[in-house]
Amino acid sequence: MIAYIKGFFRYRFLLEELVKKGIKLKYRRSYLGIVWSLIEPILTTIVLVIVFGTLFNNTNPTFPLYIICGRLMHSFFSAGTKAASISIRKNAGMIKKVYVPKYLYPLSDVLFNYLIFLISLLVLILVAIYTKTAPTLLIWQCIPALVLILVLTIGVGMLLATLNVFFRDMEYLWNVLLMLIMYMSAVFYYPERILSSGFAWVLKYNPLYCIIDIFRGGIIGYMSDPWNYGYAFCFSILAVIFGTSVFKKKQDDFILQL
Image (cartoon, rainbow, N blue to C red; front, side, top):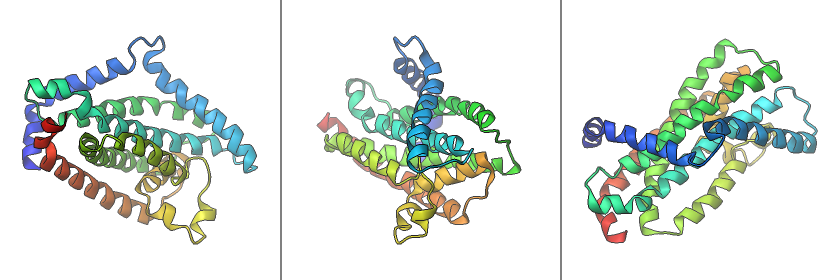
């Protein structure tokens, strides 16, 4: 881990260039460019509010804000982990020719998606104005939520980057798992009924749901359950330790599989 930290500072300029490259490639040949990162969540939220608001007969005025908070957080986790999972295979040509710390590839893919995610948070202002939701003192909860979602995504991304080198089907399996995680994270429904049932563990032991609830608490103005803080913190730290450890242990074998 110490070697990773030293390498990070030594190659930080290369990491910056990889992040810039990722952003440029993502919006290459796109007329809207990064503006699309603001339009897409708004359009998706409108559809989800119409469908699930009608389906569950939901008249809560903050429902659009509730949905877009979950939508943005899950979208970053999904985009960041998927990009990281294919990062080693995608850069196989460079890895075979030039020595660069291999962890920079999944890390840069997570970071450029994180920057886009931070920009997309601007839509929360528009939705908050639409729902007439004023910020409260509890908005501080957004800070730990934003840190935890980044740490969790890096940890899972490192593990997926390793697995995807040796098991090519992992990329497709992860897409299926992401859909299941979305349904298990209360992105577009209120969790009270599940939390009061025998299936409460589906949400309580889902770190992404815990982080989303912390973030929503900061935006909408309620105090998240202390369990969410403790569990999300412990899981995220363990995820990044385990993910980087597996990556470090197997990285010398990547060249044999690419």
